[in-house]
Length: 448
Image 1: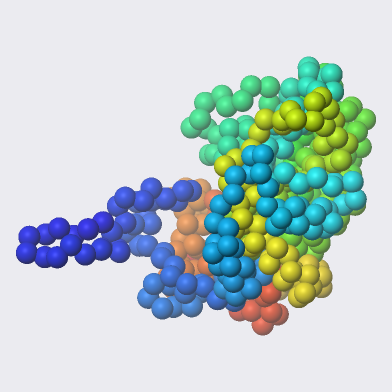
Image 2 (image 1 turned 90 degrees about the horizontal axis):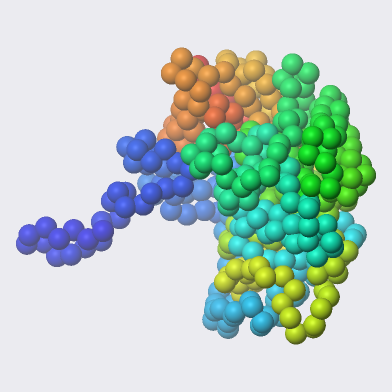
């Protein structure tokens, strides 16, 4: 905004916060006590007043290789000077084909085709559309029903919101898509509290899909979409055997299974994709976030070759899938993605996360006795710490933790209601894990 006061030159006013309607933010509270970031390097953000914040959230589950990676910045800069934009419809760039090949190589065998978009939300909607289109061209046009899961998060498109199961994300927007149902959430505090890794109890929850098949008829169900670890709702790891059981039931009834790995992809659980960790081959995997280390918007869907090949019929000059985005496989995002995958490979960050998982879990579990802590869950380099709601209502204690961490303890965390989510970059050291846990303990005590 410009200050046009009488007798003053027009100057930029950088601290005018009025015009920006911020996403997923308590705007009024934020603008009273802003949390403004000006820079980032390694494991830290730098605030506008020069403080260094340890990043316990990898930005927003994105910066798995840490911040300020010069290799990625150089790749983006070089590409911007060489090719700023190329239309993805009917034209292509070499970097898109190279990146698709490298992502397919990281995915489980059989998942060989990559469709690019720009975010996790677009990836979820893309996967759902591919599922519907696949059944249509395969002569199973009655398969239109989509199944999500309570407490699931699949972005904010109409498709992803419809199959998602976070109440506040749904309730303002009416009936959303028709023909959608939900499985139960996989979390039961009474039987799973303070679990390290995959809870022992809960595989049988997958059997609820049989109930939905009996209710609707298998020949009406196109796909089931789940997160191997539900992240945005507060870190809910899949119980042992749950995903394999879900795969068995979907295969039995001819239903496609989609893993939403927007959060779990690219090393968060110690593997390139959680599908590898759990030994399950889904029909599609969605990805985003870590593919470019958060340095450029990109998402996508990795698709079984059998699904892809079903579309490759008819005249070879005809468009097989009428879907895509202006910025699909954007040159700058492709450059960022290739540089990011180089870092993951050269620094063995997926393997590093795997080796650090047990020590990370032990450190976070040391918070078990802190005030108002009612559960802690860990899997990979991820943890969820549930706190009791305070007398002012659900979410207030979590919001106070967010503010205290930023303003008083030089730390960035994520919160989901009254759950603290810890998801540091995969470059985090054991000493930094200790620092994060120590600071989280101070935050928890400060809001007791």
